Image 1 (cartoon, rainbow over the protein chains, first blue to last red):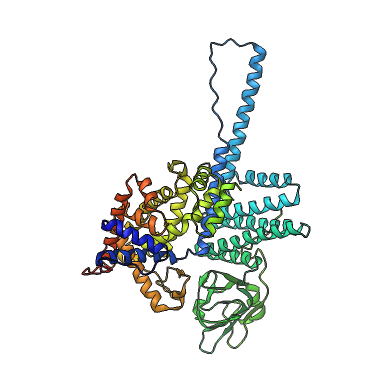
Image 2: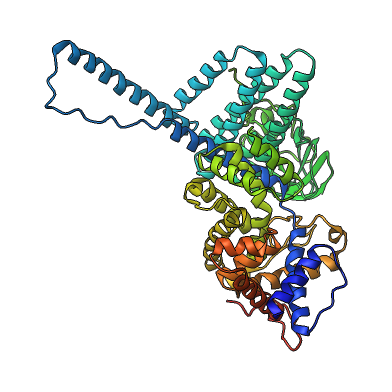
Length: 365
Length: 223
């Protein structure tokens, strides 16, 4: 037996679980060890978030391609001009031709709208198609399926928009649509009567909501601060633990620096202070509910300020401290916005409100 | 869901082999851009392509880009796939991956190439931690560090093999294909594939310092 065949036999025997294998020489032993190293690569796990994110893309692309294939219009064979035509027959042909052209235009429009994204002119047509499909689904079970499919589709649109580098308005619009579809899907499942069908629907919904969370978390790394805030709020709406800011206090210290205290929830270790969308100040202490940071008073300009937190995972929250607050609570800082030493010059207690910082506004289907 | 996909799913969940007929049916459905068939192929091949790309590139962020590109090409070009055999499918996908990986390697400087982070650490400020292993190694930093080095060396060793040799060893040891099936898709006799496998493993053993008298290749040896 030649060494190549012998080595292959040994590999096969090892694959069948034999541990003690007689090896004839060092070269074979070394090759067998190399095969073993390659086999060990199978211990590497694919990150589940990446796998499901890519699957979403593949599904969307497959659907798109299937749609393109499904709407291919057969080319009509041209008629011979030599064939004599009688007038009534000609009118019929004209009518048929016109109908065919109209159909082509409609199909072309539908195909183009299927590829459109929030912010595109044809996206309205796509939404109308969504609505039409929903209206046709009279059975509650069908309605759930349609809602879940549409939610998946809007998630892909959102992802595509971010990957294509579209502007924040388009991303925000896409996120609003995702939020609306999420609510629609949740409502459709809730409307089902209790029973096995509802349980199955709930499992499907849970699965798509998990995909949504993964997709949103993945996008956090690829978007600007305002969109990070909006994504965080949607994650919060899905029940993920995300940061919130409920109270802000700015106090001037004896050394002239400003001490900023942000109170809220779910501040992660290494949380950053963000002032007007930019990292600022030096965080001196942080817990899951409070952040203390110091900033030079010269870095504090007058006017409204948005103070926020940015967790290492990209989730974020902020509270806007407007000019009125300065005037109301820190009379001396009216002219330049600099707080008076020793006083809680700027303090605000509130719950972030949807819309103020890019919150998706759930719409209605 | 079609019958073929039903059987497929049960087998794929357990990473078992699927019958030739089932695989051929799934490929035929995928050529028609059937969503479930394409996803089934993706789920089947993802671990193989991901592991191969990680061994070659080392950087999880780059690997994700490359793997995404490979599978999007798969979806777009599945109609061009002539074979209906699993080994042929892997060979085709690996060829796509090879092209994408080569392009990614050309765009990387040497210093950027290897930075697989340890769990709980950041290799650089830019590359996120990816928990690559689901085994006991995760709780053993020393063993994990050694494994990381081995992975790096495997990547460089694979780089030294010809495309055909890479298709054979990856098809054989990561995708679990038989020599006979690989021979059929490569248009060779099984004996010839065994010879190529032998030479590839020999070369790998030398690069990995497993062969007697061989010198372990330095990490910077590869351009």
